[in-house]
Image (tube, rainbow, N blue to C red):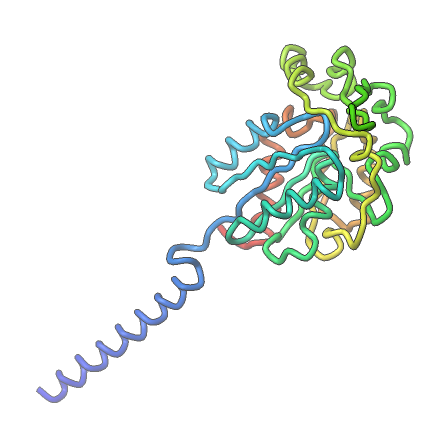
Length: 271
């Protein structure tokens, strides 16, 4: 009888310790299994969040929470401040993704944010302090952005810039079907000249946060040589997509989503 009582006491103790361990693990993970990071998608100039439809569908199907930021495209510092506020509203780890000018925005917005575990650049600008999207686009030969822009003067003295719809397919989205590129040309959101010309300020986030660069091999907006230069400088993990246009995240949505998931798995460590 005594032996049985001792056995029951030991079993009860083991069960209690197991319950404590489970409760502690639960507290650390919010009461359930470790969550996948939230993927925040930041579009660039001459596009909007609808371009991320294919990428978002794949990420959602694979269990990732997804948020598409509305990038104002009014000025680099103010755009970054708005995205930074959005990041502050998200609980848990974040993988922050930027396309084109959106890369400059995330490089600033993520600075000092411990929840941002990876920066993913999709055919994007990765500026150092003092550099702008405009200066980086022109650092290497091959960009058609200058000849593609259509300006609209604004009442406040600024200029809105968009890609001339007649040139959008050839220069911005060559590997996207023509009828789809025509829609993107119509729905594109303009950026101010101020936004594209404003130099980055402060220490960029890519100096302290792991970065990943998906390089569009046939980009006519940010020359591939410029993308490689920025990726090497930031010590990023790189994947080149041969033949891809500047809208690589549209034309190769599956490839872009897989690249984002690779960054998530390597930096957050979920299964």
